[in-house]
Length: 193
Image 1 (cartoon, rainbow, N blue to C red):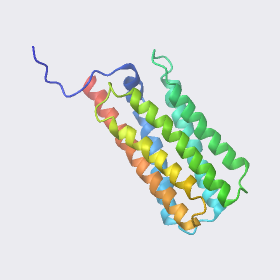
Image 2 (spheres, rainbow, N blue to C red; image 1 turned 45 degrees about the vertical axis):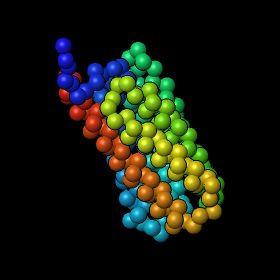
Image 3 (cartoon, one colour; image 1 turned 120 degrees about the vertical axis):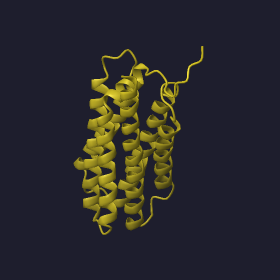
């Protein structure tokens, strides 16, 4: 009576995420593109940075909300996806509504957004602990967001170029972790089904 399986049974949360793995992939791709653009254009003006951040936050929020809506038929609540999606959409809207923000306000705004968003990513990862292997990568992505937000909030007076590179590096690392997660979920779904 031994079982030699390398996979957990897919629970309701993981099933919803697995069925919508492509949304996580799109979120990751958007983050990586945003990060690459930050490195390719190191002389970005503040307005260009505001626009790039606003587009990224809106896309990330919409993809997160779509994932929550597509999973609404499941018995497991996806409240953290809804809240995280709304936070990102709100960040994008505020960014476009007030493009003339000063560098300091933008830095504080981005730092706060990353800190809150990271906290919800960690909450979601903790809830997935029993349903997916290597959930520590999800927690690591959330911790990356929290550390990024904290670093920005601790030193908001950093130079514009350093800020652009820091934001770009964060976006690339976060995006790559989301792409990895999407591909991993797709693999789990195929193995289950």
